[in-house]
Every structure is written in C-alpha cells, then in structure tokens.
Length: 180
Image 1: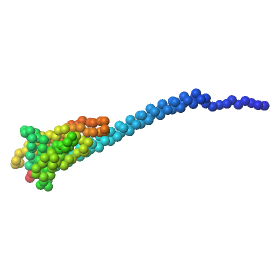
Image 2: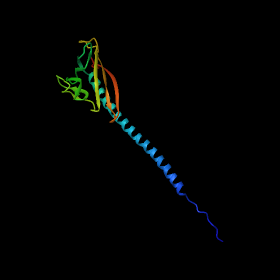
Image 3: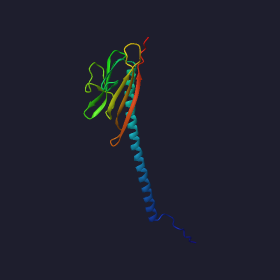
Image 4: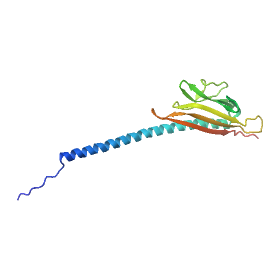
C-alpha cells in the first residue's frame, strides 16, 4: 500500500513576495527609527542650550539681587546695553554683549573697565546673542527705593547643523540687600 503524501512547502513566487514585503516594511521602520534618533539628538541639543542660557541668566539675576551702586551705560532713560554694579564681595561686575567675529554671547567683566573684547563669555558658542538689553529703574541714592533690573535677551540657538531656534527671554531682579 503506497499512499502518496502531498508535498507541502512554499513556492518560489510566495517566497519572493514575502521577502519583498519584509524588505519594504523594514525600510519604512528603519527610516522612521533614524528620523526619531535625529529628532532626539536635536531635542537634547536644544535642551542643553536652554539649560546653559538659563544658568547664565539665573547667575546674572542672583548677582544683581545682591548688588549695589547700579550703573546703566547705553541709550538712556534706564535702558542700556551694559550694566555695571558692585557685587556682594565688593567687586565691580559688568554684563555686556560680547562680540567676537560672527559669534556673540553674554559677557561678564570682574574689573573696572569693560569692553566687548575684554569680557568673558557666559554662554555656549552655539548660542548667538543678537541683543542684550537692560532696563533699570528705582536707582535712588539713599533709602527711598529698591532698584529693579529687567534683562531682555534675544538670539538664536544652533540646535543642529540644519536647524536653528530663535528665542527671546526676559527676567527681572530686584535688589535684595537688607537696608536696616
């Protein structure tokens, strides 16, 4: 008794179609994965730059809060592009927009005379500061008013080779020196 067992398996056409479908699905998945990795890198870079800028501004605001003898050099009417004051340790601190070629950052000087070239940069080189403006009011000699400073920073961040992010940030600080 010879029973014929039917031959089971895949034909060549079925194998070609299944390998083709698998290839197309893998191509789409790989492209999506690479796009996600690129977006993640840009997001991490942008976050790192925002943290750097926030740290610089918070440091500036902290120094302004504990400072005295504010001096605003610039346009007048309490608006300036360079802010000088005496910090809690008795040092003269000056904040200015530091320009070096095509790069510009927030600069700080810890001595008397301060220029853009003598300032030390506080921000990452991938952050370009287009405008740094200080608004100062309430600077009165004597015990009448606590000085207030509003800092406005406008610029761009280089998140990746092909992507820049524009930003405008404002922060304010009020003198916190006890006057008893």
